[in-house]
Every structure is written in C-alpha cells, then in structure tokens.
Length: 68
Image 1 (cartoon, helix red, strand yellow):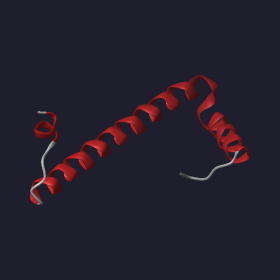
Image 2 (spheres, helix red, strand yellow):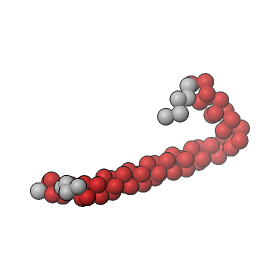
Image 3 (cartoon, one colour):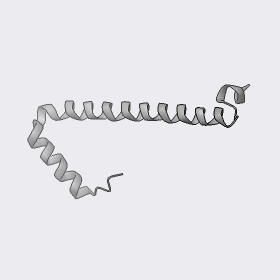
C-alpha cells in the first residue's frame, strides 16, 4: 500500500514514541486501528451497495434471489 520498508517503519515508530510518549502510544495505536477498521467496513458497505445497484440496473439477480 505505502511500500514502507523495515527501516522506515522503525523511524516512524521512534518519532511517534517521542511525540506521544510511551504511555499514550498504545491508546493512539488502538484508536488508529479502530478508525481504519471502521473506514474499511464503511467502504465495503458502499461498494456492495453500488454493485447491487449496478446488478439491478442491468437486470441481474441480487443475493437473496440466488440463495433461494
């Protein structure tokens, strides 16, 4: 995705450690992880909705009709 190597990741971690401190870093990491997860879930929902709309426009079947 960002094409980061081990050296770059270590530098980023050290800078984050200096900026946030050792006590706050786990909280910041957890919040960042949750934010990324929620963003991905929202994007997947949008993509699935868009795909279903495309199928409906071209006369395709949706998931409930295929399962029956």
